[in-house]
Length: 402
Image 1 (cartoon, rainbow, N blue to C red):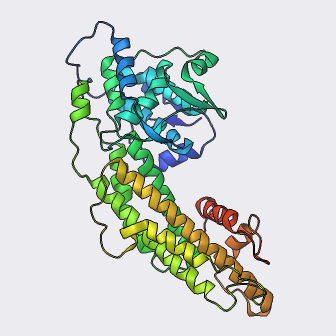
Image 2 (image 1 turned 60 degrees about the horizontal axis):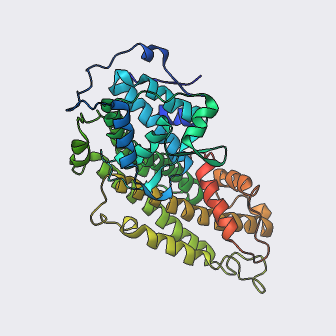
Image 3 (image 1 turned 135 degrees about the vertical axis):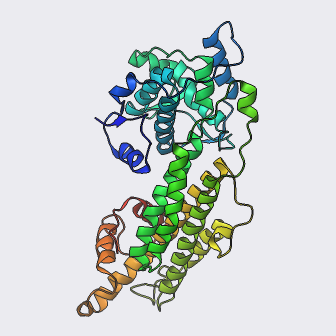
């Protein structure tokens, strides 16, 4: 059974391993008896009804807006919050265990994408994450959106006691920002390996080296001490200047966008071949639209795709969300190139099979797996479903090292 070890640093490799596992995650047994290195700060007041006070604070801050956070990011938030609280507060054991219960039973609190400034200002999404602990708010469970109280009743879970100190600790982390940041990094590293195979990039090793600094900054942020917050006013007014994490995320967005722009240029070159990669160019338009689609995606990457620095890099949660957005665009760009390369490889083999492989063995192997989902474009067809599948393939395929 996988265990969460709050008394040990959370490495990105450990986080990835936990997320890949299909087993329930539990709190390390030794952590049940452990004590925090220092006691949590005392709050500046003593409310008559501490539990009601904590519930009211979470309710007041649950003001998220925009689309719901994808399940993949809610899963990360649960693990990141559980590790942070377990490390920071010896009294947080019941809350940590319940967060892990949610994770292991696939009970996903409804969290919204908008409402956080990040870098210690994640209190709005964290309020949505924490409300279901108390039987408040909503969750997604087995494909249904349900009242949290109903799901707690289904499992026979009693709400843990949430003291004012623990409520402030729950709300004072950066788990929303780090969920975006850690996923963006994992996907960016995977993307660069895909780009190396699809486009035979000689610069991929250098790009991965650049992401090494990003990895260190994100891992450091995952293990940073939670600010000592003693009142709601302090929670809402704590300033957070530009950080190493912001700069690292800007570097991540730049590397991903430029890899995507390179894929767009190679796609245009492939499609520029006579017949637009069409087996019957007299009667087909082939993959004529791909360069235009690729150019539109590069345009959406904005200044990140250019050689210089992007103006006014975003800060906090916006930096992490922007990095993930750019990585997603780059995945689509490499997917477009893969579709064109697979078409070219199949056409080359059909026309002159005795010439041997036109591309690298790793690409030929990837194309064989790609063809299990997306068939050769023998006749003009609507390519939109293929392009969605291609981006997913880039994201999920186990790319070999070139």
